[in-house]
Image (cartoon, rainbow, N blue to C red; front, side, top):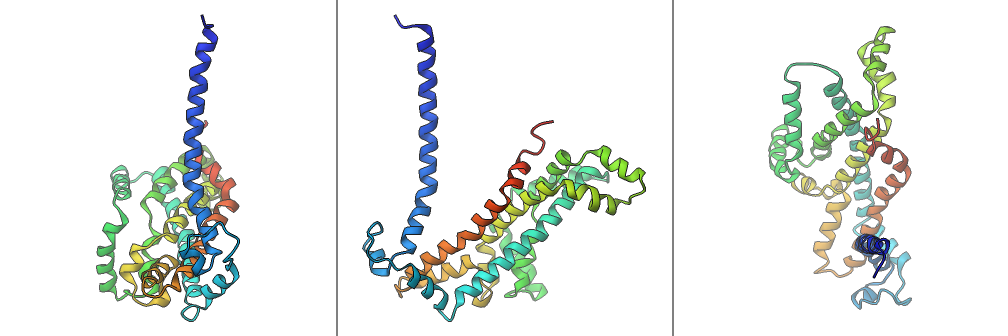
Length: 287
């Protein structure tokens, strides 16, 4: 007859083993594509087509990197700079706008506030691909199609960022602190800029990272808006090269190398800002 303690311990161990198995499978699912990308980027075209990724032969990392930045007169470098401009500048301005709007929704009273916020929440559920055609028609009326602004302006306004901004304002900015600033004679703009904005720093970084990821991976909007390849972001440019690879196989190694370099800014941003990002995600979790 088994002891009661061992009966209780066995399901607990089985549950822990099941959780560890799920975590291990999730890690493999996440890591293996990245590992394949790293190995494939270092191989020549012949080794890549031969599926001989683990063999030390066919190592061609330097040649692939050189070919990437010389292909089509250095087009990839322009695409990379375009993506940095779209994503970094757009995410910074978009985060400022989103956090300011969320702060206003939380701290100010005005007519139909909750109804307007309901519209913001409804906009969160609208897929971005659905908005591409209306945005194209609006940009066409304004004469902005096939320009930098046709891609840059729409990414500055993010309903999900406004929602997060309101959550962060509730969790980080006490009303008592704002009242104290107003009693000291600070105006609303001064109160926000010198008091609330500093408290919203972790929230601002969190919204920035979400915006950065979304804009960097944005594909459909540039495809609709742009026809000039000099304005392409990395995502659309690599798609163009990949489409040409079926006719010109020399594009395959440079597409893989370009894909590897394309993920580096996101990894770098998350590594450098992870301290603020993690604290931002726990906003309001503990009172």
